[in-house]
Image (cartoon, rainbow, N blue to C red; front, side, top):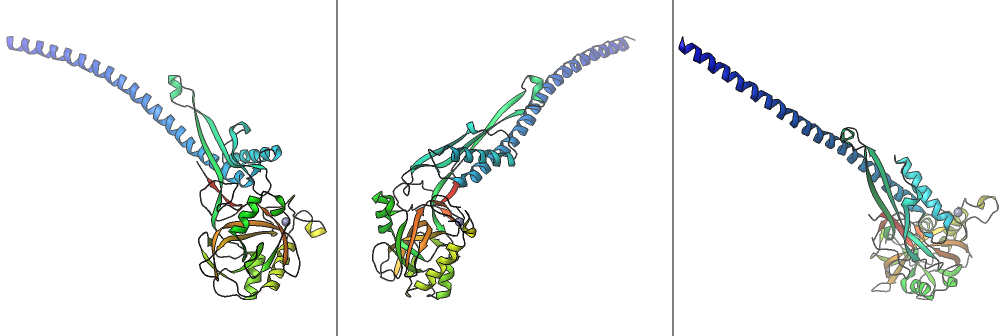
Length: 351
Ligand SMILES: [Zn+2]
């Protein structure tokens, strides 16, 4: 009997202890669950916000990369500045971000345009901020968090490109023109083309593919640009033949190819005052130094000019311009002096 009672007491005692423990476990589990849920809420909400940062970064990159193709713009040209800003807003919205405003877009890196003497912006920067509503973290009083991402695109001199015309100017000549600081040396300039004989102000003929000249190839290269890639540092052969006739014919094709500003209906078409950046009258040429022997030249950079007129005895009139071109950029900033920068730029993300 005695044994039995003890057993029973033990059992009761044991039961009591068990109840207390399970009570504590419930409390611990409850607290842990709250902590766990809070962390989970935070993780889920931050995860959603993080996904959004990727989205707005993409929108910011697209905005500067698309609108940046309107660079450079004169620092005084408010309509052009507003147009580039509105274009950035447009491209950001196409990429899912409606939060970009003119206030969050800035133009920078002002450099003197060596061809017009006006200052120009050469970089576009945007910052997109988005308020991301919280779902779970709301329970803990956090209704939303702000995230923001920036992107910038800048012009940088092209150091490898396609589409060149097989004529060029010496770096010495080009730098002297830029250094002269006189628009008459850069706008409406008359140059002679044909075989380079060392004379100043001369568009020397070049054999871009090194295969020797054929007048037909040469005319096509003048009219449409050479399809191969040419890089700064490349050694090119001078063209032996005079090539005066194919050059003249190629330029006529280019000049008559303009379809802008009434060119096809008796108007002037593209001129230095107003031109379409894709116009066939824009000719991209290598700037070179003379090579180690008299038959070669070394590419130092690229320039572009707008074809204005020519005569059939080999004189051409044109104006040097800044253009955005396809190709690879050096990464260097735009300068107002030359030094491998003669006005042909690529657009690159700089941030
Ligand atoms: Zn045109």
